[in-house]
Length: 115
Image 1 (cartoon, rainbow, N blue to C red):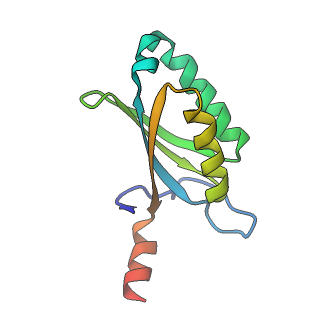
Image 2 (cartoon, helix red, strand yellow):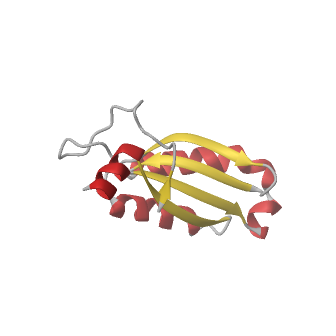
């Protein structure tokens, strides 16, 4: 579980039950296959963003970690099933490998620990 400063205070996206959507930190490592067409990175990112939105999610922020050759994507999804569906749609192309963590707002973490 990733705990840190990934706090979605800026968002107005709520689940059907009225709570904030779960936040996820995803690390996407470009595969050898993906590196063959690295100049299509922007195009692939836009396709990935569209996929996230079609699954009911939203990309909050996205970064390329230069020293690691990875993307860090901070996103929200209505539930775990939507996130998994988005992941499957992404990895089936073979251009990235995927690692994901659910992120809690620090105050939520404190409630759990102190409860």
